[in-house]
Length: 177
Image 1 (cartoon, rainbow, N blue to C red):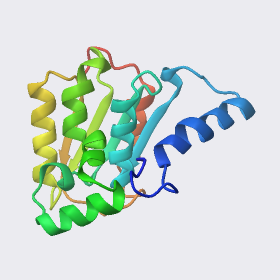
Image 2: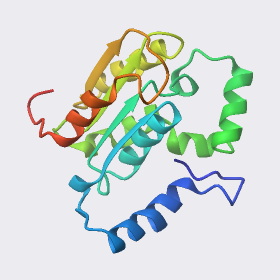
Image 3: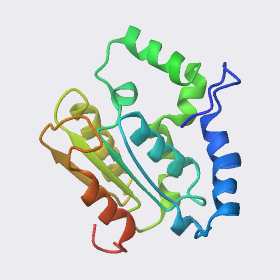
């Protein structure tokens, strides 16, 4: 979900945007507009869904992130662990800032418009406090979004959160969030 700034073989965002999407559009019947491109993910892929939308709001329409690895952004996380994750996922601190959700919300959140295009599931537990901070930031910045804080459940795709996420993605929710 990010282009690593130190490892040239790790260009996940560029690969998706420059290779995967054009290939799918060329070989399958798709809605090639942003409204036809919806993102869903959990944990690191939830982070990726949010950063892809916030970095490319003209390419993607909506994103759902469930139990994202938000501690790297807002804490609480030991500094040594934070630095290890940044180096592993992004390379350096400057590149991390290019993909940091709180930074992107401040920089590009208003580009999402008046419709709720982000749905953030926050799950109690170690990621919960950071998720509350991201929600507060979106409220402070007046970014329309859907937010749900729920009891801890298994950190898995099949733990029951997907139906509501898909409903958000495929339904027009103007004025309903």
